[in-house]
Image (tube, rainbow, N blue to C red; front, side, top):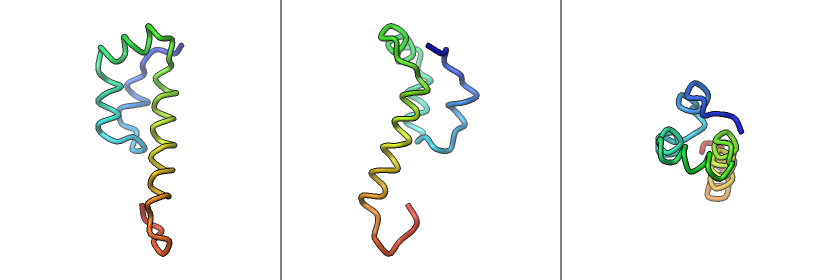
Length: 65
């Protein structure tokens, strides 16, 4: 498991503020570490889900999300 890397996750514009704050929380970090979950995997999943949900709800004529 990779340790939490503040430089990679916090300033990343692909993550919402809430996700960045959650991944920065020491309790969340401890739970992820205890479960053997890589925070980068969680961040990647959040990014992919945001894109998927955005595309699903986007107006077919709109390219902005």
